Figure 1 (spheres, rainbow, N blue to C red):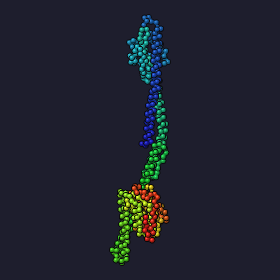
Figure 2 (spheres, rainbow, N blue to C red; figure 1 turned 135 degrees about the vertical axis):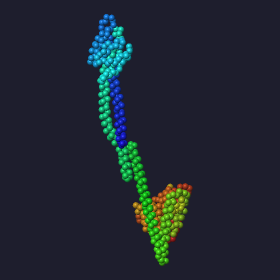
Figure 3 (cartoon, helix red, strand yellow; figure 1 turned 60 degrees about the vertical axis):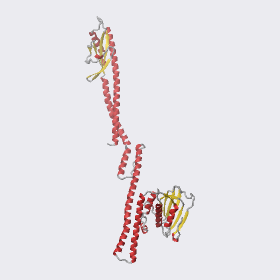
Figure 4 (cartoon, rainbow, N blue to C red; figure 1 turned 90 degrees about the vertical axis):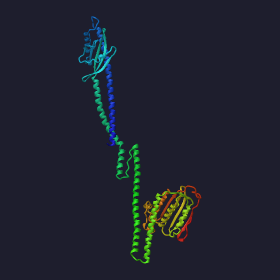
Amino acid sequence: MKFLYKILLCTIIIMAAAFGISGYFFVNFVFESALEREVAQALDGSSILRFAFETAALNIPTKYNVLQDAAVRQIGARLESSGQNTGRCLRLSDEGRNSIYTSEGFSEDTALLQQIGPETKVWTIASHGDRYYIHTGIVVNALDRALYLETLEDVTEVFEERSMGFSVYRRVTLAMLACSGMVMLFICVWLTKPIRLLANATKRMAAGEYGYRAKRISNDELGQLTTDFNSMANVLEETIHELKEEVRAREDFIAAFAHELKTPLTAIIGYADMLRSRKLDEEKHFLSANYIYTEGKRLENMSFRLMDIIVTRREVLEVQPIEAKTLFEYLRGVFAENKEQKIRMSVQSGTVYGEPNLLKSVLVNLMDNACKASREGGMVKLSGKRMENGYAFEVRDYGVGIPEEELKKVTEAFYMVDKSRSRSRNGAGLGLALCVEILRLHGSELDIRSKVGEGTCVSFVISGHGPGAGGKGAGAEAADVEAAAAAGAEPGA
């Protein structure tokens, strides 16, 4: 059963119970009030009849000052005839509780007669067939005789009014339940609309529409639930998008890895087959062997980079203080033999906290990429600067640049913007992927800005807090050293 119908059914049951109980007590209250009034009137009428009987007994002449039974019957007939329009019946009994005078139709039941005492008035409700009566009893003292006077007052109308009241109330209750049911149906539809919207949103999202959101139509708890659901859906959509990107990256990685293996292996196998199946002159023999060696070194370099990435993802970093100048001195030595680009280093003294060999690997990869992207004789700048939250490294080239749509992909394994240029320089597209993993261990990340034809700037910040982080102070001047590789000069810091 739908939640809407459950609410409606429960509401109708509660209302029916409330109407039924309240109606029962209301009709009964009216009935009991009317019955009490009739009982009071019957008792008053009984007292009046006793007074009238006693008065009439005094007016009847008797020979022995004793009221005779015949006189009692005579007085009883007069009293009955005087109340013909009231529907009243009466019965007179002697001292032995034997009937002297009884109206026609009076009940033969003597149970109430036995309860009448000298100073008491008794009454009860009696029923004969489909009629209801108030049966009263009282003692009458007349001329030294104690007689018993009983009356029957017809109160059938009071009971009929009660039955009619219940009948009318039942009809009114059914009509009110029908009307209130329609109103409650409208209210339930309105109250449960947010739930239906959420259910519809859930179904559509389950069908693959991850961008669909439920509409908020109220400011109550259900409205807040809708907001929370949409927030959850946003997180879910982002997670699904990340998972899809991860799957795509893995598929691209496998495809690129297979391609990167296939190209050199095909060449190696081809040249190796040529060497073993043909007799070549010395020059062709050397060229074939050199190509095999070159492609083998490229495969070796690619395997080392892959191992570095795998190891880096599992490694727990052991941080130690490092003077920034020592990193730049290392880079100066690595690129001292570079004769194709001009290398300029701008360094501020300071201390960084990290793993020296891993940071050197990051800087070497970034410098190597910058050199590969630069034209012959182009400028490559490496700078280091103290900041409040650490030490910033920046590598800038003025080469070919990277298209904006490819900036997010350059850190993926095996991804190369210019594959022909990268392969010609033994590149496999693993350098930036390795840098990302190393910086992740250091709590940092690459910031890449590039424009096609204007060059690329790659920067990152390493924590520099701790003893010695201040270096020479905030006002220390940078040591700028320009290395013109074509002129044979060495860069210094």
